Amino acid sequence: MRIHVIALFPEILGSALAAGVLRRARERGLLEVSLHQVRDYATGRHLQVDDTPYGGGHGMVMKPEPLVAAIEHVAAGDAPRRILLSPKGVPLSQARARALADERSLLLVCGRYEGIDERVVAYVDEELSIGDYVLTGGEVAALVVIDAIARLLPGAVGNEASPREDSHAAGLLEHPQYTRPEAFRGARVPEVLLSGDHTAIARWQREESLRATLARRPDLLRHAPLAQADRAFLRTLGWREER
Image (cartoon, rainbow, N blue to C red; front, side):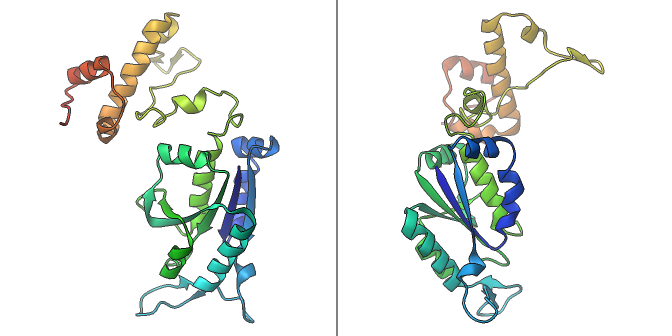
């Protein structure tokens, strides 16, 4: 997969791309990331990429000319799916990350300052948000998107089963995890995990996943694939199924 990033501060992504899963995915030829400096597409003596907003207001707005020029130049050579990272976009989900991981090429456009000129939206395929909060710029959001996608690429993660068992992968939060030592400051690993009974362990993990989801993200249960046994267990915890 190829991912292009258009940004005013592309160097922000450098250290993350050189470590962990992202580094391994790139070294194995699974992921190629190209960083593009938007100022390279600006014109004029000062290579200006922002200006004051029409109608007044605080801060600066990114100009359409350099952004659109960058988008068109990158897209002409690779025909990627164009994505504008924006707080007004559709929230990123695990399902959306899986769908994007199936794309051949992506172009992530990062905003800065108070935002970008609205006319740039006509040159992208979708707007994507990583949450209901405001960042200094889209570079960090681009890293989140790249990381979420890269770990889904076959061969990127050492344990192939790991991405399938993460929180949200199956529509629920993940069950609690434990490792050595068995006892830490009076808190012990649940006995069932030491039993060697794989059927009992799987049941405990499923029930703890359901328990955590009900306690912390009950909204996920509306769309999660639940078996009859799941529903019965949730009802013992006081869950009332919406109809």
